[in-house]
Length: 427
Image (cartoon, rainbow, N blue to C red):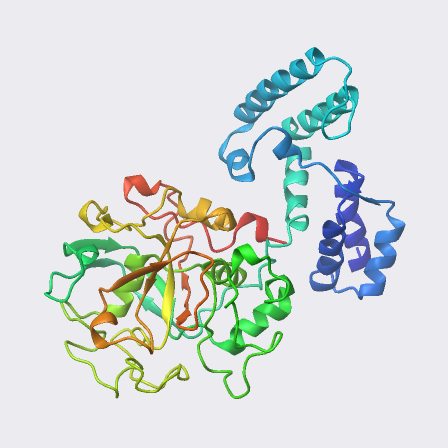
C-alpha cells in the first residue's frame, strides 16, 4: 500500500466508529498525515475532504458515563462491560422517568437515550472501544505527539542502589529530616538543565505551549516572560530555560519520551556518589563551582561550572528544578524506603492526568539569586504547578521499561515505570 492508501485506511477506521469529529481532531489527522505518513498538507487535506467525515461538535462518550481513559485501561473486558452497562441502565431509566420536557443541553430525552445507547455500544465492544480511545488523542490539543525514540545522549546513568537522603545538619530545615536510607532503581538523568534552544524545538512542534496560546491556568504571567513571542533572548541558546511552569516541564518531558525526576532521584543524582556532604562537590562551595548568591546576577550557560561525580552540571545554583512529587513537609518521617514518591497517584496516572494536578510540586537545587545555605543538596522547596519565575527550570529522567515492568502503587513504596511512551502519545 502507498502512504496515501495507508492514511485513507487509517481515517476510515475512525469514520466507522464516529462519522463526526471535532475541528481539533481534524487538525490532528492532518498533522499525523504529514509527520507519520509523509504526505504534503494539500494531499492530506484532499484525502480528508474526500473521506466524508463531518466536522462538528461530538460527545465524549467517556464523560457521558463519568469514566476516564485511565480507569478504562485498568479494567478487563468483563469489568468494563459490567461498569458501562450499570451506568447506562441508571442514566437510561432516569431519562425514561423524566417525561417529555427538554433537557438543559437542548436535546430531547429521546435524543439523549440514543446517545446513551451509542456510548454503551461503543465502549462495550473491544474493537470499537480501542478505536475510540485511540481517536481521543486528536481531540485534546495538550496531548503531545511524542518526538520519536528517546535519546540517551547527554544523559548520565545512575545505578540502582541505596543512598542516604535528607540532612540532620544545623542548617537543615524541618522538612529535610530525618536522614533515611532510600533504594532506587537505575535510571538516566539529563547532564544539563533543559536549554532555551531545546525548549524552542518543543514549542515549534507544539505551538499551543507558546506563551500567547497556552491557557493561563497552566502558567502565570511570568511564563517565558523574557522571551519575545516564541523566541529566546539573542545569545542565550545554551542558557537553561527558565520561567517555565511545572505543567510545561511535564509536557516537554513527555514529548521527549521522558519524565521529570522524583525528588529522591534528583537528590541521589545531585549527590554524585558522595555521602553526607552538603553540596554536589563536597562540604563547601564558592563562586568557582556554582552560580548563586547573585555572584553573576543572572543565569549562566550550561556546563560553565564543574560536573559532580555522576557527570551532572548545575545541580546546585543557576535555576531551581521541578520534580514530579507533590510537596509534603513531613514526607521523610514516613517515606517508603524503595523508590519513594509523594503523590496520591501512581506515576502512570500522574503522567496521564498532569493537567488536572493543582497541588504544590517540589523544587530542588537552588538558583542564582539565593545564598549558599539554600542551595544545599538536601534543601527542599515548592511552588504551585502554574508558577513560572525566572529562577525555575528543569531536567528530565528516563528509565528502561524492560528493566522494571511492575505497576505497584506509591503507597506500597514502589515506583511505577510505565511512563516513557504514554499510550495517548503514541502515533
